[in-house]
Length: 88
Image (cartoon, rainbow, N blue to C red):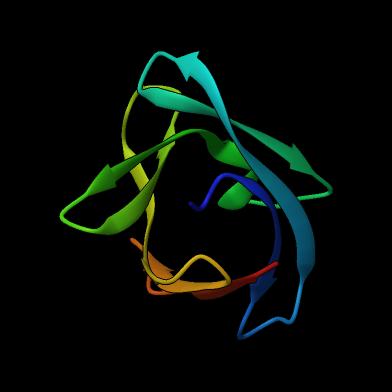
């Protein structure tokens, strides 16, 4: 289960913020709450599963990040190639 709080780090800039993956419905999946996040993480509004990956979406359903891993560590890249690590 990947729901709950995550610490998000931009691998290149080492910028840190927190997100919370909820079970509350959103337009493009389930709601994501953010705290102290810069773009592109600040644009995330929803999350879904796709072929085992966790996919983080913007308000219009566009894919912001596609993440792979397990319930304690996720990693992936933005459309611009920025790498992100998420840990509990």
